[in-house]
Image (cartoon, rainbow, N blue to C red; front, side, top):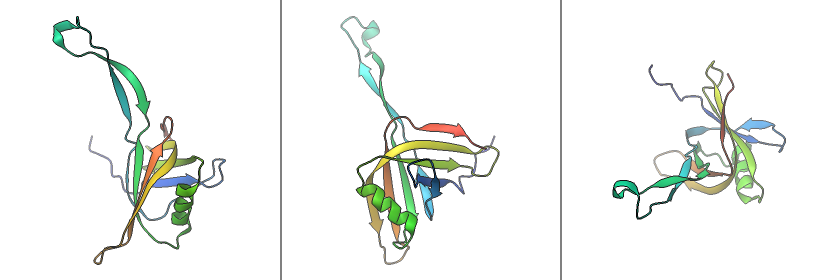
Amino acid sequence: MPGKDAFGTQLLRDTTGSGSFAVVANVSDLSGPSRARDAIEVTTHDSPNGYREFIKGLKDGGEVEATINFDPGNTTHQALDADFEEKDLRDYQMVILPGEADEHTWDFTALITAVGDAYPTDNKIERTVTFKISGMPTLTPTG
């Protein structure tokens, strides 16, 4: 089976704290969640064949990174600035293949750990936003 086209993927933020989500405008690239798991070494002097041994450790929900064609007057971009400043975590969603039968949604709770802007002389204004996930991100079929 060939790959799927990522065009149309959406980033949404909970606007009310009660599950009312709005699309963040002008997102050009999204990546993540980049989940990881710790490996705890349990090697002993009698480990077979002199190989290190490991058991599963804690999991990390990872990060989501968004690149945005930044518009300082856009209310959804201003909301991300407010999210960076607030102390509470916020719920976000990433909708993959929106409107298709195979649509899926990542739900995650996160804090914004980095916001970076770029103002090149020969290109558009861009903003990169990094979301650090707290807890387990969940991928659900929503199509």
